[in-house]
Image (cartoon, one colour):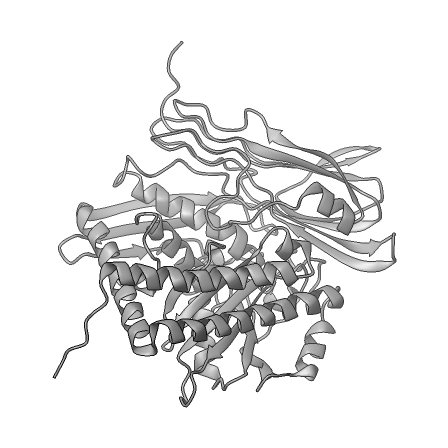
Length: 530
């Protein structure tokens, strides 16, 4: 009797990169066929591959906030539905593994011939520029999730290869831009089909049993790498706290507190958010999937860049987040900003806790906000509704090795900007200024990166909503480095300028302008004396 040879490291790497290429191609397909600038220009999407058990085994080079939380959406689909060949599930419920309502996830099974159980699952998630609700763009200052847009539980959008027309019609009837939404949804479906087809090609290339051996080795390898990192850290407990400015409805800072406990002998760690602020009336509550995703991201950053990130990475790490808190909200709390703002502060807080443990690796705080800007109205050029959504980059925090980058998205977002040409073509806006915000990074031995100035003139009446942070707090420096500058949002009218709070909505007239000045990053090290 012969024993099957286990894959060697080279073969595991080949399988890992092959799976990664499937996720990347899914993303490329989605980008090229999507209708909205937010997906095709800004690349606000993510793709991933899962095992038959729902374990993450490969991901694209996409959005950390999507990728870390998507496994919980896949788990929700597998718990609620039996996916058959040709089926595709859809969901966006933040309380079922989603992030916020604009992020719509699709999950499709991969069946092999003569097998009655899915061998793999492919999934993608994309941010839709509007999913209904009280405010254009579905990112406004709401008090409960029902006000934020249409909430989709795990359901089948496609059955045996046929679209459920009634379900699609229901979704499209509840959004402001149904044509664009339908185009983006069909792009997601096409990307899932590409992923399933490529997975079948990999099975043919490697053979199913060999591919499963490689996947098992990848999962174990991610776990082993993470355990080795934990074993290299000292034993102990480290604490940190940081704050969100407010929730947009009630003034006052909102604390996020974390305790990092490491046991190098057992090669295990606990990340405990006990003591964080209770959930709030405004829309910056984070669901557990967001908090777990932020922790996943931070610890993925501790691995070598070439390491294959799979579900095994988090096996040695326990994440505790009190139910009913800002980091694990109960329904029906509003959550639009938890995905984009609270996720960033969770990362800041955990990195602050790790800074004494890894002083040569942890950078100062980056801008700490996605500076979400949504604008909606009737386009005077064609009299049709439009919704625009964009996140605006800021400064990176400096590290012990170098200064921070300027004008980059950081941490939980990995999107691009909307190019001015695409912006002015698609929307009734004129770009007045798009520039680096000089001297907004913290001062120090290694200065923080500078933020961005983005100023738009409206060419028609519109509702403008801002969901941002670090307007009252500042991105902190490390090793006596200076803090980055706070962000600013200004409405410019003929009658004068108005400084806006970080989270608000306004009705603006044609000719009004909005200027966002994003925060800079914190510095590392004391500024040398002249």
